[in-house]
Structures are given as structure tokens and as C-alpha cells.
Amino acid sequence: MIELVSPAEMRAWSRARRADGARIGFVPTMGALHDGHLQLVDRARAAADTVVMSIFVNPLQFGPTEDLDRYPRDLARDRALARDHAVDCLFVPAAVDMYPPGAVVRVTPGALAAHLCGPHRPGHFEGVLTVVAKLLHIVEPDVAVFGRKDAQQARLIARMAADLDFPVDVLIGATVREADGLALSSRNAYLSADHRRQAGAIPAALADAHTRFLGGERDAAALCAALRRRLEQAGLVVEYVEAVDPDRLEPVATVAGDTLVAVAAQVGTTRLIDNIILGDGLAADLPAH
Ligand code: PAF
Image: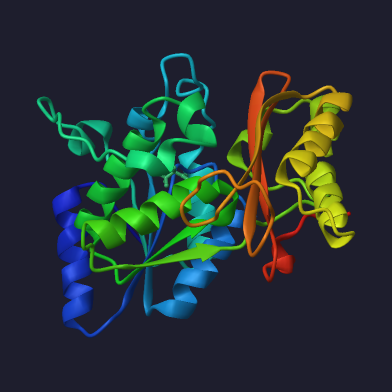
């Protein structure tokens, strides 16, 4: 595994690989790697010949009161995991190279950030899209893979690639879950043992929504209200529970066709998100009961 820090060297490496005929797969991360990231690497490798992973804790996507300073960072551990998982190139740029003094232009998300996390994290998706746009320009991959746990992010990135003509295929990898269904997240590292137990209410509530859906419930407000109640009963502070169209990310009144049901909730001081798609497919992504 080669490790690169300079954007110019990263681009040169990718171009040399492509000149050799290789398809390049890319998995952007903020480090604190877990099995979810490693499965995205598998997905990238299945679609490409060589896999680049980036690790960059992007300051632009954290609000002033969010967890930028305490976000888990362990490059030595991440490097070993990436190497063991046969990542070909690890790109670890410095903040000053990603945002040199004077850099002011940003990519804005538009209407796709009007619901779900958008209103609760002002500027977050602008930060995500800006860094992902830069990373895509630097790495120049054929395929880039993002996790479905961050459903709104994944949708926005796919939309950005389409709307701004990025020559890349955006793939979405399934959410990877613990035995009790909790979605893997770097932020799970913040949870105390008690909070970790409490967090199990999120996949349980989503599974309950799925059961209600299978039982014939199609009223989005009723499904969301039951889900919210279940989370609140478990002591979580709910930020939102919403049922939206998975493409336009606009609220729906009735669950007809695929519907993204997404939640954000605080467990102690940790904010967690998760979602399911109710409807025709994607049962593999459902939390365990
Ligand atoms: O999902 C993440 O880890 C980040 O938001 C991403 C896509 C790497 C951009 O910083």
C-alpha cells in the first residue's frame, strides 16, 4: 500500500494507474475505520482494479458546536486496517492543502438539504459536497462508494455527480450493523456501556416500523409517530423522524413505493443517525429484530 499526502502526487498516481489500463475505485472516509468502511472497500474492489481510500477529517462539514476536536483519530490503526484490507493507495491530505488560504468557493446542496439532517446541521452538506468534489477531482476515480447509513449524504453526492457532470459512478454500500442492529459508525466510539445499550433502541424502532409496514400501515405520520414514541420511551432525545421519497428527499404522506424512513437522535451527548427503506427491496439493509 502506498500512502500519499500531496494532492498533486495523488492525481499523478491515479493518472499513471489509468494509463496502465486500471479502473480506479475510491472510498472517501474521515478515518476511525470500522467494518462498514472495509465493506465499502470490498464494494470498490469488485467494481475496479485498484482501490484508493482517503482519510481526511473535513473541518468544513462540522458546525461550530459539533465534535470536530474530539472526532476519533488514530491514523496508525487506520493505516494497518487499510493495509490488511489490501487498499492500494491511502490518501491522507493535510487541511492546508485541501483548503489553502483564500479558498472560498463552496458547492451548495440546494433543495435536497431541505429536510432530514439539512435544517439541523446548517452548512454540513455544503462542507461534505465541497470536500467530496475536491477529492473526486484529485483522485479522478471511475467509481466512488458511500455508505447508505448516511442516506442523505449519499443521495446528495450522487446528485452532485450527475448535476455537475463528474465522470464517476457513485455506488451506495449497505449499512453494516452490530449483532443488535446498531449501525456501525465512527461516533459509536463515544458511547458509554449504558448509552451503547440505549442506542439499540434505534434499530429496534426501525425494525418495528418495518413490522408495522408489513402489517399494512401506510400512513407516514402514524409510522413516524410510533417510531418517535419508541425512541423517546428508551430515553433518546429525538432530533427528527421523517419519511421521505428516497430520490427527492421530500416528505411523503403515504408509504407507496420505496420510502426512506430516517431518524436522528441523541444518546447522551452522541448524535446518531440511521434509516431504512420501506417498500419493494433492500430488505438486506433492515436492522435485526
Ligand atoms: O461520510 C464521511 O465519512 C464523510 O462525510 C465524507 C464523505 C468522507 C466527506 O468528508
